[in-house]
Length: 231
Image 1 (spheres, rainbow, N blue to C red):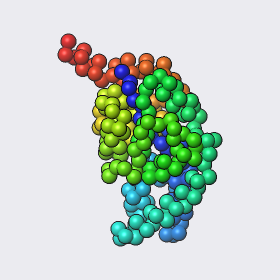
Image 2: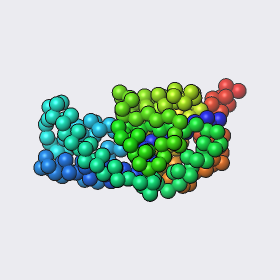
Image 3: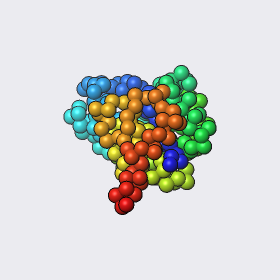
Image 4: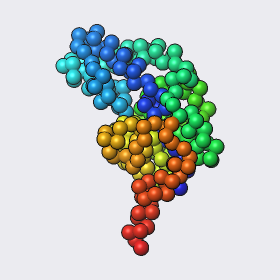
């Protein structure tokens, strides 16, 4: 039985990847190397500092921990300036409608994101009131694929992990959800998100009825499989 839905932010609720890409690319260019969209895809679900460390490795640039903190702060200032101009029009198709459906059905909603700007984004896009709990990069110490963000969200929602369904667009996020003992629906390409229990193109393809049907199936109900094995 699904008692709570936990959503990643970037690529699931809104698409801020383009802003991350522009800010990281600007930083890389100032350090005299380039940063590609393909590399940006590899940063999905990772923390800001881990993303920076990978980018510096790709650029062959060595920086001290203090210098890394300074660079991360510069990148974030550019990024925040961009997302401050976000509006409800930046919400991905079907996201707001599905959140409203889920809540109307009595299912709790939570956000589990590595972003330290999740609160600002939800405020600017008018979605903050649709979440019962928000756990982001400001409240966790480990980034995905560590399950901490999802486990903490489930705790705030007073829901056992086995009764949570996570919506994720990143491999690291899917691994985190699985490590937390949760069911996970991937948002994106099935060929990429092979670890998910089910994959859809976006939340516009979801409904409470479809969620309920998936939860009853063996694919999204590990407890049912366990009972069958014991029988």
